[in-house]
Image (cartoon, rainbow, N blue to C red; front, side, top):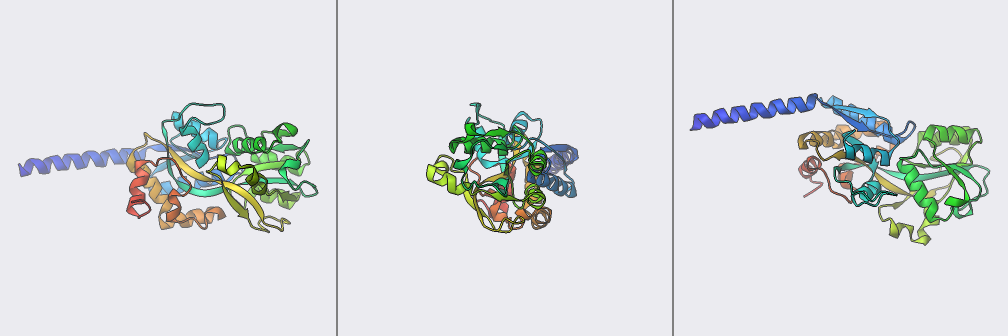
Length: 317
């Protein structure tokens, strides 16, 4: 009997080893974001960390948060970067013009806070969003988190129909802003943003205090996954005062069908000491990222593979 148990144990171990080797040999797909944004920087960095741990993970560009949620839900990609608020809306059937409840998508972990950054020309006399009238402003690509949140915000502020809001990606938005083809741009991304940096250095700009406009209206009671954040003075050239705005949590998401062991390994390479150091080198928004932040700002369920790692390091009980 003891000999039979040993033989069975050997074959089970052999089977699991072969299964894991096959899984690691696969190349998984991850959707990042538009060129010039922070999503794509994180996507590429995570793919690099995975490669260092013998995991195949290929990063690709996308329109952004909403696009990534759709792609992960349908299995066109396995992983993606999205906003916590959009994941919450998708799971609960509350996305704009879409009552479908997304059932195949789940959270892995927090990456960074993504603040709204609403820039106008440096000579603009506007100090409040509610003063906007007749302006041409880009809110990001259709399908992006920036565009979805921008439309939500400007409609709540009552100015959506009073201005010309267009859907350009970050690169075109900044290029047209510098060339005076746009009066302003709306980005939903970590700071300092390379795109906003470019606009501030080549054109000059002011940033609007979006939180101060929205707070008295009850905006943050209606959408509790947004929180207040301050972009410090001098983060960008000639922006010499603090900007009081709001942010959502940027998170890594995954299709539920991805094996627990794979998601465990991906989670581990991100939140181990070396992973956190590497992300901090790639973008300043990760400089203060800690293991304890892994579950921050996420109000939806986590993948079992992520839970396994978080319990190991004491982030979850």
